[in-house]
Image (cartoon, rainbow, N blue to C red):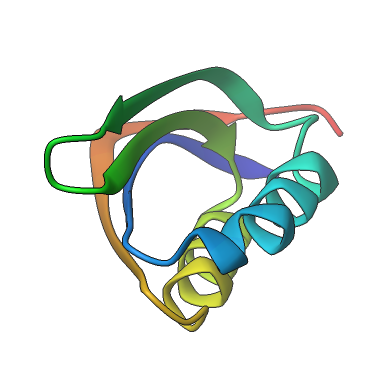
Length: 87
């Protein structure tokens, strides 16, 4: 199976979406390498960065599901390195 390392940047403007965001991230926990969250109270938003090593389809599905939530914006950056795993 082919995997890639990617970074998903998430900007949250609607705190009502936080629970669903956490559910989606929990469902992909086996692919998540790291997560950093930054609350920015001055602008009343939160920023989360998620680093994954996952199949490209899983990365784009997660990013798409997150981006469809109300008040949530995402952007995904992919590494050029492609890894083959023995799964």
